[in-house]
Length: 211
Ligand code: FE
Image 1 (spheres, protein in one colour):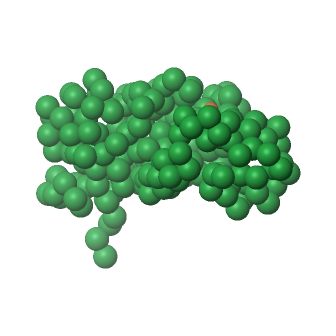
Image 2: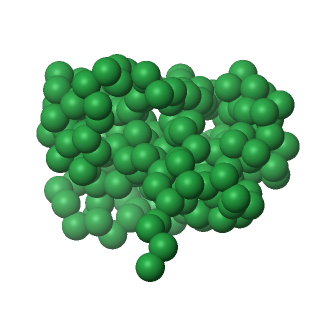
């Protein structure tokens, strides 16, 4: 099956295919070919998994946050075990453990993968390009306050910033603070306030000013 450079697995992402074919891409393709050739996985299973990952959007993470804001017992369970809490809502958070880091009035959390691009894809969908950039990965650790300001997030001096470095074994999501002015909102409306960047920590949820 791996002969002649034939690939039984689905085509790679176009944006990746347009770049140079790197050592890591060759390794990924070779491993995929081997797993298929040895019958460890089928092409159908591989396709289904890729579709599951591609179907994930930040709306999943937002649902967890909104439920945590409305249900203190769920919030406790989410902080203990994100993957199990997600399963309660019928959300498959994947096999890699995800830890929720909770913002407080004194503490702001932001996530990064300094090594590569580890990201809770099952909860948030594909990582934005800037998350994978060398600039973000290196700078957010050294000067988080300046980087967040560039995202338009100016934090008061008394708010401490913690940067969490994701790995292949542990991923993070930020549990943001429920914003002022959201007291009367139902869970679904609350979830709409929680953007992808709120879950990464480069933004905080805000209630839009009434026009
Ligand atoms: Fe990584």
